[in-house]
Amino acid sequence: MSVPSTLAGVSPPRRRVAIAPAVATVVLAGALAWLWWSGMVEEILAYSDDISFLTVQHLELVAWAGGLAILAAVPAGVVLSRPAFRTVSEGLMQVFNIGSTVPTLAILALSMSVLGIGTVPAVFGLWAATLLPIVRNTYAGLRAVPPYLIEAATGMGMTPRQVLWRVELPNALFVIFGGIRTALAICVGSAPLVFLIGAGGLGELIFTGISLDELPMMLAGAIPTALIAVLVDFLFGQIQYHLVPRGINPLK
Image 1 (cartoon, helix red, strand yellow):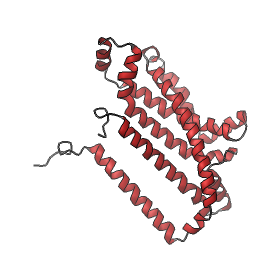
Image 2 (cartoon, one colour):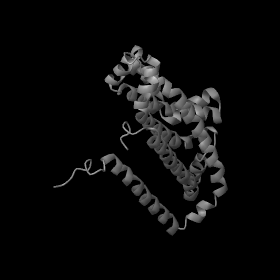
Image 3 (cartoon, helix red, strand yellow):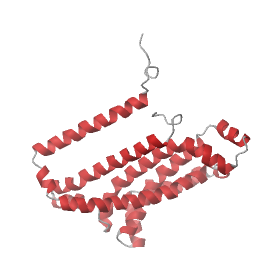
Image 4 (spheres, one colour):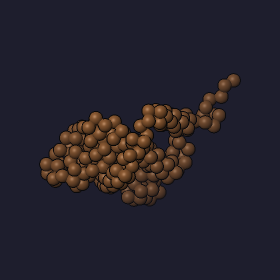
């Protein structure tokens, strides 16, 4: 008689987690093999100094925009999940939806028209494009906390603030981290566009390579951007896995 995977000690989520790195490794190995046999590796490495300098700029932009988005979006999601705001929460959510509905390039153009060119409008544009997944997941995670847990905590004499910090947020943490990971992936992928408003980053190599029809230059910017996205998602995935306790973490 066959034994279900959940009874055999291997749950479907853990199996997917085990398969994902293998698939990513195969894809990466195939891409590296193609670059090696095409003789393009040496041409890409010719831009190593530019890659190092622009990668630091790229990471700084993502850190500023992503960090500010987390600081703004998590409290906003908490506020929208409170009983006093639940009747208007979906309407207010559309304010944050603007950053995802409007194309990132249009947001950058609008921010440039108000804030000028350079780092400040770039960070603002990326920040606006990053907000919605964090707000939405924070709101959804807190709304999904079982009511009986809140009632039990209230019955034990906890104040609303204590219920939020000790019951609701810990139980919503896994979902909140999911929103943060999605938002940071959007931020890393959108960051090359800020080169168009004078903020630097790896977009300088990508767009210059496209303009000059230089594939190695374009790949010198595109490959590090993809690697940064993978590494950032992996890092926050590990934080999510180890920070969210067993019992409310479906990966454990």
